[in-house]
Image (cartoon, rainbow, N blue to C red; front, side, top):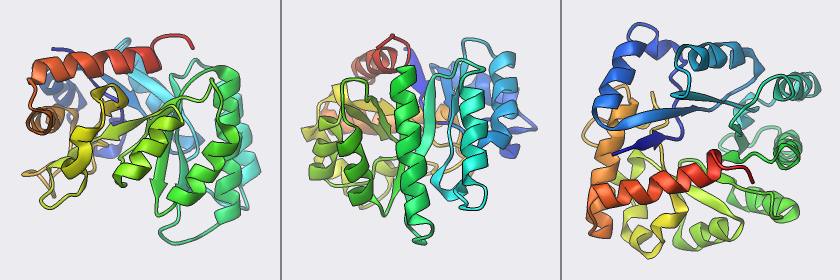
Length: 257
C-alpha cells in the first residue's frame, strides 16, 4: 500500500523533537510521501531543509496563506514568494485562498489568491486552496480563472454536496481528512455519491486529529484512520481505495500538465 499525505506541516516546531520517528511510523503504516504546504515566505527555508533531508519523500509547496495577508506587507511578501517560485521547483502553490472567519482584509485576500492562481497556471503546477467561511468568494475567483491549466486540491473540504460538485467542475479535487471521522459530521453522509477519482487524502498535521485522537497532535500515520473510514463509506477495501487515490495524486502532482 502506497499512500501520500497531501497536506502536512511537518516542518513546524511540534515535530522538532521526533521528526525521524514520525516519518518512520508513517512508513510503517504505508504512508511514504508527504506534501508540505507553505504559510508565507519566512518558513520556506524550513520546508526546503526537510525536503533536502528526505529527498523523494518530502515535497515542498510555496504560497501565502490568507491568514498571513497583511495590506502593509502584501506586495513585498508576494514579491518574495514569486522570487522563490522561480528559484526552486515546487510541487504546488499552496496553501492559498480566503479565510473570512474574522472578515479581515477581504480585498487583499482576493488579490493575493487570484495573483497566486495566475502564477500556478503560468508554471503549470496545481494549487492547494484554503477556504473558511468564504465559499462564494473562492468560487467567484475560480470561475474567473478557470481553464485547462487550473488544477489542484480544495484542502480540508467541509462543504455541501452541491459545493463539492462545483469544486469538481472547476477541475479541483477534494482534500479529505480527519473531519470525516468526527461524530455528526455531514460530509460522510453524502461522500459516497462522489467518485473516488476526485479525492486525495490529507492530515493537516499537527492539526485536525481524527477521532478518537482529537485534542492530540496529529501526524501522517493517522491517515490510516481516515482510510478506514473511507472504506466504510464506500463499502470498498482500504487497498482498492488507496490504489485509486494513489493515482489521483500521481496525475495531479507528479505528472506534467
